[in-house]
Length: 383
Image 1 (cartoon, helix red, strand yellow):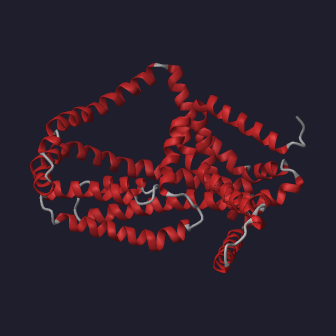
Image 2 (image 1 turned 90 degrees about the horizontal axis):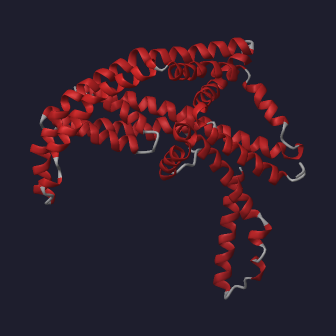
Image 3 (image 1 turned 120 degrees about the vertical axis):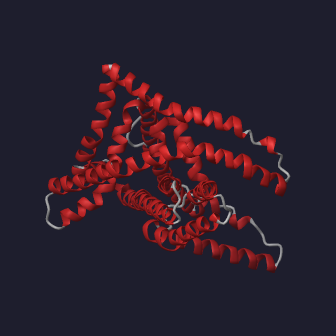
């Protein structure tokens, strides 16, 4: 094998990379998380650097900002969520009783669904027992980690590696990109630069934009439900924001959870009006402002493709696969779009076009119009 066979070399590199990811999966999580943080912080570091700041100082400043955000999340958000989870554990019996005494008879009356289809009593017992065991399981896990010095050191090392990897990658990000660019064959640099630029645009729109959209929606839903005096407002709002990584999933999950919580708390179906208003306003803000402004329309991932990518990543590479599933899928979509355009312009796709004889003038006109539409679409894709 020589380096004059780029397709063979690329195939071998991809196969070796896949094998290494599979073999090194237990230790890759801190490196992927650190690389993700470095990628997210690189544009801000570049901005500071353009203002005359040295790269090391710019990276240190951005790294400090990232640590500050994480610290605020740990000190403020997590205790609030813990309080909400405790509140939910106390409300579970009431919610299940409402499902048995109110929701089940209503479903039976309106849709002829028998009550026996909902084993509420068994579900209540199982949920309460499992919920109470969560604390015991967490305590046992922590005890096992503490009792095993090797396990504890491994866990602590991986945790401490995340900020270390993030800082050094952030500091040397431009150097690493230049080194990778220097390995590309000189006659392919232009194409590689175009693909890299589009991949960066797509990844930036998804990782930065979608993350900000999730945060904004979580805040909007939490505030709106808090105004309605819903006791589980923060928990349901955060859950809705996190589920928004899949289009419309946050709306569906959130409005169902908020509806159950509202009706069980207030005991009136009219409480659903406020929930619908809150999530309706959130959808309007997301569709008309947040997504166009922060994400745009360059990602090109269908909601079903997002769900499949997350499940496939988890199946193939566990937690690391879930982390990289959507970014990898976004990059694959960039290459598929370019392959689609190249295929439509190739001689192989158009080689028999002259052999097809039109049956009549109307068919010829139809084919001419279709060809013009195809060329217009390809011109638009290239732009």
